[in-house]
Image (cartoon, rainbow, N blue to C red):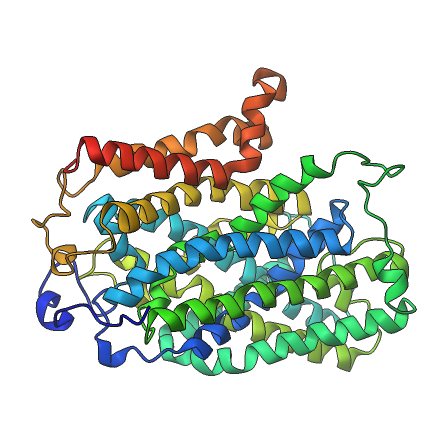
Length: 494
């Protein structure tokens, strides 16, 4: 696995195409400088974040003990690592970003469909990260100004102060987007150590205050005999596993946005394998251990680390912790939730929408989605937000891998990916085979989703059909993979 460049001069071949701009053009071999360490560092920077902490902690709130939660997250990341590495292959070999990679399967215009679906999910994550950073600023203000947090009194469901702090942190993100992608490099260099240090300090505090790891890690699983949810472990585990996979299902698709800079396939494989599962497991352990400790220390389970930090009495400690959290969250947000959707939105009109404009679109949509509602409780966070979008991203992943690895045997016509009349034109720029496979993969999860958000009554849908929603990513991936290959053999040009 040592391939690097595609067998042509990318810049000379596609620069004049209306389907190309500087951000979507193939990366020349000479500019692919990311080694294994670069990819490991990227994943450490992105995985060591507050949503990872919240993700792990929410499993504790759902009834798991510490090792069940950590193991669930570790298994999920081993699973999602497979499509992550597979989809990264095309980016490394041909130097192309995710939306261009989609053109081979979906068509030159149809590629906008998976690109926009992925972009909208990124907008949601951008909003969630911005909300977390804004909450940290809000808590700093209440400590410094000795304010008593007011109850929410408006239709947004949050206070005016919270909303203003959210917009302040959001504005800082937009300023970084305005400055350009190179501005985030120094943030990524310092954010991972900052957030890991903050997590370890929280862990040390939990160890000392709760009386050692014994009390923390001895909290029983609610699924054990005699406990409130006895015998219901697997009913919770499988949808939780699907939600954990959904956490990085976004990056498992658009990983070519990063792997296009890899020196070789070996570098992207080793770097991702080292960086993703281990970091997620470490930060998951920190999250579940501290959350378990809050049950002992405060008499209630607190899964939000921002709320945990507000319990500290020393204002200097709180302010320093919140500033570190803001900087770390800013770095993760820009790297994980702006780079890819900016490219996806630019793909709509490459000659009119730049990376900067795409980043601003991401920010605006992230506000409209009201992210504070997405993370309001663990149940909604996992079973509505994470599983719901995995039902769409799973089929897209199945289609891309089926097309690239099975149908095309990893051989793409690079120049044709940027041609309006080339072999990836299909029917007026759309591959109906891919669209049908996408719909087929997502459809089985729809009834369960509608029940979950209470549009349909649970009694109106057969339980077996409702239960399919708990396996949304797996079912969507497998169905779309199979249907795509079957239809492509029947209608190779449709």
